[in-house]
Picture 1: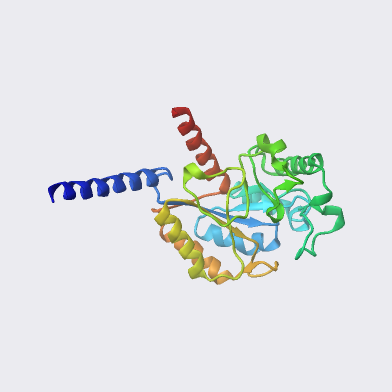
Picture 2: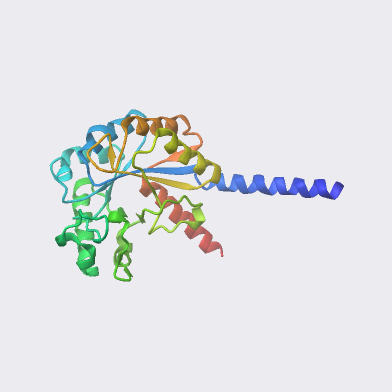
Amino acid sequence: MIYKNIFCALLLLSGYLLSAQNVNVWKGKKCAVALTYDDALNINLDKVIPALDSVNLKGTFYLIASSKAFTNRLKEWKVAADHGHELANHSLFHPCASGPGRGFVTADYDLKTYSIRRINDEIRMANSVFEALDGKKKRTYAYPCGDTKIGDSLYINRSKTEFVAARGVKPEMLPIDKIDLYNVGSYMINGQSGEYLINLVKKAMETNTFLVFLFHGVGGEHSLNVSVEAHSQLLHFLKQNENAIWTAPFIDIAEHVKAYQASKTAQK
């Protein structure tokens, strides 16, 4: 009985130490959360950024450099960057691979007809556009439509040095040592309730992981959409629990992950 009690105590202690270690990797918080918004929509400037600013949270905006909602409102995007929001790269023209359910893909921007050189030239050109606006050289990337390959090749390989990290679309939240920085998972939101969004955060808190939200429309402007109310409920939950949740631009969390993984590699 004595040995059994000692064994149980050791298990509890090891669990406590592991939990403490996992918490510490996210700057003393239980998890990390990034709020990302795709496609350079007007609604980002009209509704999303004011909502984020109202609770002093910062988002990541994956911009299509040729989008009119970007090119027609450059001054406003610059203000957003000056206020701490991340302007990130979602390509120059948003090319996607054609296929079933993708009638929106045009022949001119069908990723299946692209060369590795073309997509990387367009990615770098978009980076130059964004740098001219916010003056920053460090950037992150989000794969349009989640497509990572041309043929059998990962096209980002030629541009890895251009980016701190890249966001994918696989719905997963991983511990800091398991994250692939050039295909970070995310949860695409389309019509879910505020309760659903908050429960995702609670799961990240329980598992000490990195959670990335992928939004398009917020209150409209895109076929993939979430209500303003559900989005607001999420933001207020994050704000109310900021002592336990590290909410930051995707690039800030990615740089933290990269530094952590490098330090662990150096220790081996």
